[in-house]
Length: 318
Ligand code: HEC
Ligand code: HEC
Ligand code: HEC
Ligand code: HEC
Ligand code: HEC
Ligand code: HEC
Ligand code: HEC
Ligand code: HEC
Ligand code: HEC
Ligand code: HEC
Image (cartoon, protein in one colour):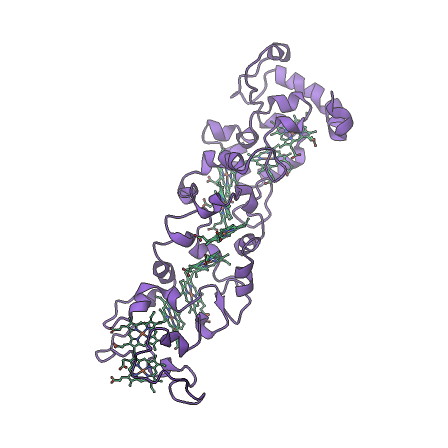
């Protein structure tokens, strides 16, 4: 066994575990889905390695198996598999384990995940997509994150639970995203911010990190549809509509966080004057106390800026 000197664990395992293990294997007491043959016959076989079943893996990897069994995925695959693929359990992800077991735990003979794996990110993701291609991952292929070579296991930790739910690699959804989106983290600290930090909203309320048919990974067909999920009163219909509002809330609001009140992209009156330069209101600079720029500025008078249902609300005064 060439692995001995390099891997002290295999020394131990080979003494205490391998011998009884091979007995177990040849006694045929395995879970039954694999076509395992007695050791001597198998040695003469040139075909692809076969599946040995989770009980064999467990013999050497007790801790890993126990931690995994406590996760949702582990429970289903080990205790209540619904099809042949799920019944492979460990080997559904790590591939057939025969050669790995014969090599007394030769790590080059088992499919591994993470940065140090010889398998490419795409190959690693393929293992997961065997079971998770539909549903939220429908648009994974071709998504921004797939295009940037993100691995499922960048955001998910599978063998044990690190987060309260969804097998996330960090405790919260936002912390998963903040690994890379540092600007969003910074925006969360600004005076006006979506209450992500407060736990009332999170990134996945508005984005699907697995890919969408829409730009910016939005969970709805447009920015506005996303906002209406929670701000339904802004949907209207209004007797008097303000075109930029029905078009795109993000024209005036920066949804993650801003230095200005109400998540505004720029302060009033400049916010309005980006479009209303031709209005009868003076567009020349005003003194700080002038009625056009004082306090809430334009919305002092045009308070129904998102639309009005008042018969004479065409100027959004009421
Ligand atoms: C759903 C896919 C999947 C299944 C099923 C699975 N693993 Fe893993 N395994 C992984 C991934 C991914 C990693 C990389 C670390 C992580 O994400 O937790 C890993 C890492 C490991 C490691 C390296 C040490 C560690 O814990 O990080 C061992 C050992 C291991 N798995 C053994 C097993 C055994 C034994 C079983 C069955 C009881 C099993 N795995 C089932 C995906 C899986
Ligand atoms: C005879 C004991 C034994 C059995 C049975 C066994 N392993 Fe291992 N396995 C080991 C040893 C020892 C190592 C550590 C090798 C090393 O560190 O180089 C290892 C390493 C691994 C790793 C790589 C961990 C890493 O370094 O990232 C994975 C994944 C793994 N085993 C999964 C499995 C799976 C799945 C099964 C069942 C098909 C299984 N093992 C069965 C002994 C065993
Ligand atoms: C053999 C099928 C299979 C494979 C392969 C598989 N999963 Fe799963 N996964 C499941 C099942 C079954 C569940 C339990 C929930 C369900 O029924 O959908 C699950 C649940 C999950 C969940 C949600 C956990 C929760 O607490 O809600 C995540 C996240 C997940 N898997 C990620 C992965 C990743 C990442 C990989 C690849 C490393 C992977 N899965 C590979 C079958 C699989
Ligand atoms: C950029 C980070 C990220 C990547 C990459 C990622 N996920 Fe997720 N995944 C998440 C987050 C965050 C959630 C929790 C979603 C929620 O709470 O609504 C999640 C939830 C899940 C769930 C459980 C809920 C559901 O939608 O069914 C599964 C299963 C899952 N991911 C599988 C995968 C697989 C498979 C891959 C790789 C193809 C993958 N994920 C890649 C971040 C990611
Ligand atoms: C491992 C790094 C990484 C993680 C973790 C990550 N992202 Fe990304 N994300 C990227 C990269 C790289 C891009 C592409 C940026 C670019 O092209 O400018 C991107 C782009 C995006 C985009 C813009 C999509 C577009 O169409 O322009 C959104 C939205 C996004 N990510 C949301 C999320 C969310 C939500 C999470 C957490 C669930 C997350 N990301 C986690 C790396 C990551
Ligand atoms: C309230 C909804 C909402 C929440 C919550 C949210 N986003 Fe966004 N995000 C958006 C919208 C809408 C856009 C598109 C803005 C635009 O078109 O100008 C966007 C754009 C992005 C982009 C792409 C920016 C660009 O210019 O390409 C990234 C990256 C992103 N969000 C990451 C995140 C992360 C990370 C979180 C969690 C901390 C998060 N978002 C939370 C609504 C949201
Ligand atoms: C998942 C629910 C949810 C979604 C989706 C959502 N919001 Fe919010 N929004 C909130 C909550 C919660 C608050 C805080 C309300 C409070 O403090 O009373 C808030 C507050 C705001 C505020 C006021 C901020 C302040 O400083 O007072 C603005 C502006 C806003 N959202 C705009 C948007 C826009 C634009 C979108 C679409 C890109 C959007 N919201 C999508 C939940 C959501
Ligand atoms: C033309 C610019 C503009 C557009 C477009 C716009 N808003 Fe606003 N929004 C404002 C201004 C200005 C305020 C501050 C109101 C004030 O000063 O009374 C505000 C305040 C808010 C507030 C917090 C105050 C409140 O009344 O609850 C929410 C929530 C909000 N907007 C949601 C939205 C949503 C959702 C959309 C898209 C449907 C949207 N806004 C589009 C300019 C805009
Ligand atoms: C993205 C461009 C844009 C922004 C920003 C914008 N508006 Fe408008 N606004 C319009 C358009 C387009 C109309 C419709 C003009 C028309 O029907 O002739 C309009 C109509 C109005 C009207 C009714 C005027 C009329 O002629 O019927 C008022 C009042 C108004 N806006 C005030 C504001 C205020 C106050 C702000 C800042 C909070 C603002 N607008 C920001 C584009 C914008
Ligand atoms: C002191 C109250 C007040 C303030 C502050 C105010 N407006 Fe007005 N605005 C009005 C009134 C009243 C009208 C209606 C005039 C009419 O119907 O002839 C009006 C009309 C408008 C119109 C319709 C076109 C026009 O010129 O008649 C636009 C656009 C407009 N305001 C934009 C703005 C912008 C942009 C600001 C901020 C720089 C602003 N308003 C600040 C009271 C105000």
